Image (cartoon, rainbow, N blue to C red; front, top):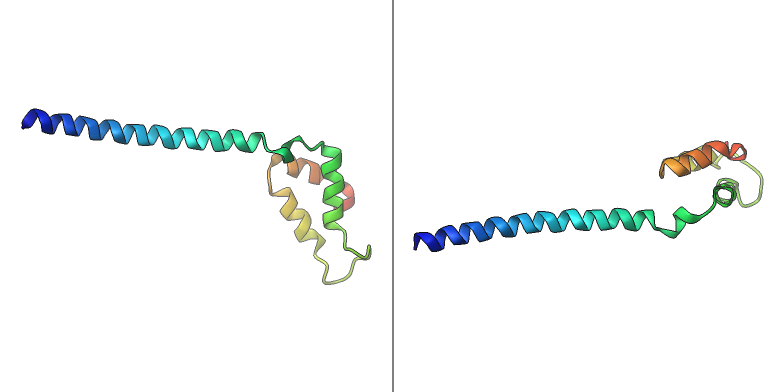
Amino acid sequence: VTTAETEIKNLLSQIEKLKCDKDTEIASLAFIGNILAPVRRIPNEILSEIFELVCYPDEGEFYAQFDSVRRTTVLSQVCAVWRMVAHDTSRIW
């Protein structure tokens, strides 16, 4: 009986370790998936043009309620690349 209990404890310990390993691998795969996302392959020049379209009002005229600063700030907080592109796109500031 004691040998069986010891074997069960060892197996439970192995199961816990395998669960942790699985979680680590899932996180690693998610990270790789983010790196390979299509949005990461957009050239900075095109991304800059998209930022301009997002930050300009539809009618092309700025007005008091239009919050371009909030839009540019949000874009610059997505990731390091977007922050660099947003800061290098002077027409949105």
